[in-house]
Length: 294
Image: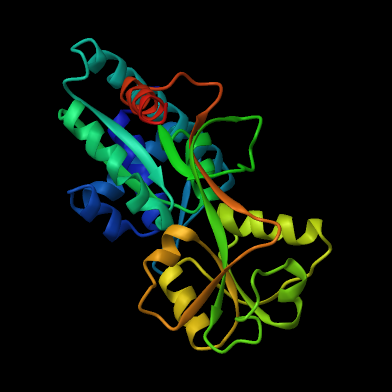
């Protein structure tokens, strides 16, 4: 059974878009051609892989198994290509880098240095929450990711700490806690709390630390956007915790930032899959990050 790499890419594009028309557009092909490609694939496999239902697409049980294998195969194919490209001294190639939305600006200096040193490497950036970065690494969809520690899959992922920033309590002006010198976890119990989406590493860290001291946060809202979170705090809809670099961007807002007691930090790192060798472009990024933090 011969299944072209292109067919695997088409299949995964359908899975990601959940729509044949959008997948065809992303693959730069007509929908009838894409449909025939999937029909040939299902004929070869002897199983139905996709169910088209009310303009959306769902995976069958066989399709779920096929998706896992397709991601692994494409990941290994990508690594093979990058290994061959490395024979020319990283003059060409591709780096699939996962970045959490809150962190994109913080990695810019490192990526600037990387581009200057390896101008032939194409940087493909993918935005995920922390847990999403981990899942993408484990499915071989990313080479390396820039996210916050700790990771959920500690035994399956390796990490290189890069830097850390204080985490600050974020309050609206005039809030009863605004005059405190610092904020304790227990201080939050009487107020609505605005938290990040569950796939964010910072959300997991805040939940873990609050529960560790026996505090139950009254979570009123969740969001994946720090600017929206800050706007809700400014509107007096709740309190929150933000990393110091984000707080520094909000100097014109009607917000008050206070240190936490005990102090908390936002620890940022590069993470990658433990049981797979890094691609040469990813190894070059890791080496550059280590050199810049020595």
